[in-house]
Image (cartoon, rainbow, N blue to C red):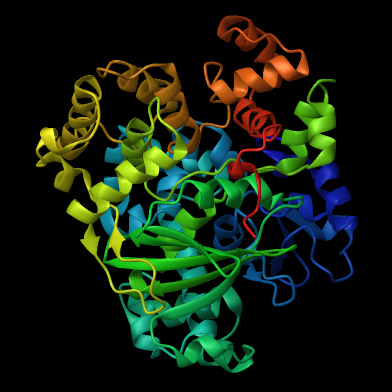
Length: 493
């Protein structure tokens, strides 16, 4: 699989005929004779090759006049892995669009975050995705609207504005155009959903490309959970979310073919952003076949991959929060890092109400932490300086960590901060920024695993040896960590 796959007609036809779900989200099939578009794994009988055309995005299909298939629901495909494995302007733009930036700040806001003109951004997106930022955001709004229609009892007018539409008329027209059904018809056809009885609570399924190994993914999140902000309960990872229009609470439960997601939102306008951030947290848009195929080529890693394929990189819903926690975790145990973080949450976090109990606060924002007294921090003076410098830079906007971050540039900015060494910068790059090639050769767990496997254990030699694992070294880290008996590697009981 590679960039621009939709231009390889022969390969796309083979994927459609084999109903290969691995290609869902990589491209979309538009059928000339029916006027609909599908995901490659659509269960219907494949059309003739001459009646198929291929597009790189659902938005491009919609712009070309095709409507979404009612059987395979291509709008619910996993996202393209391209946007989480690249650091160029198009990939960064797609991550920002998924985070709702166009709806909140417009195309000018999107361009400003990327450091380009609106014309440059529109031209690049159109060239690669067949649709500009407004069309891509419109397709996302349609998907959000459908989800709200089918899973809540909200009035249609409220859904229209919650999904990001400027008017009820635009909402009605878009839904009819994309799904060939009126909003009321979509609700009538939807299966009964008990979540409609609970205002503000939505239950949905987050798709992913198989295989997905939940052990290290949920094990890591549960083992490092900050009391009050995160918890593992009844087979689900639960945490609070700081969102653009309010706050939320999410419960994520692994299943063999999907992740069950239960969201409690203070404002339904945050739905799109909340889903996007949960998908990034769990690395659900990854392409495990490509990742594992590359790592399996190394005879040392091959047995680890074969034993438990589909490991994901546990990431975060808030890059600034993770950066703060990375500093708290410097040179201390997992338990000590949780204790430091819990004290900050109690003293400076924003209280929230959790209907199920257990969660009490949002993790404190950089602005809230910038005003604390450094003497209250139970850590060495040099690390206090590291902490206060980081939160001040984040609060002032001098350092921005987010979906639009340029990975190499941001890593260099982090390394320029006092007390930031390669481990801290690289763990932030891996888990907060989403760099799939971030590597931790100085990490004690990695060096221990390297020695046990017969790999070089010195950072320089291990980095040279790991060149063969590029561009997936962050995933190699997960497989190396998994050789240890630390709780981060096991799904909690």
